[in-house]
Image 1 (spheres, one colour):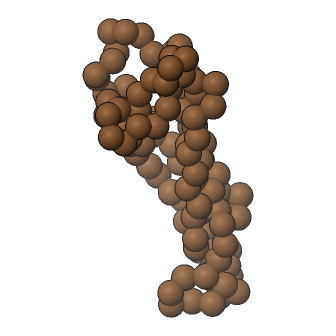
Image 2 (cartoon, rainbow, N blue to C red; image 1 turned 60 degrees about the vertical axis):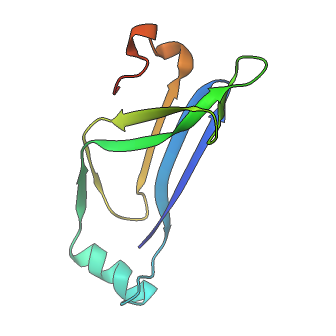
Length: 108
């Protein structure tokens, strides 16, 4: 199974998305993999998944990704259980206005 990861910053909101992209592993055909997951469903249990990167502010105080001069920011998403199938989709977003000054530099 192939999973697609995308992230974005828009209107001072950081968002990350993991979602099903396609069947086809190195060992199985797409059809065999789909049948295997239908016969033996897999429930993904995740905990402490962290999205991290360097971010800073532009001239207008908008948050931008800045791998050179930005501050390292880590976002940890809460624990969750989800089935691995074509409906697999995990999203996370946070607006910079939701982060208290006292939380800057700490693990959220």
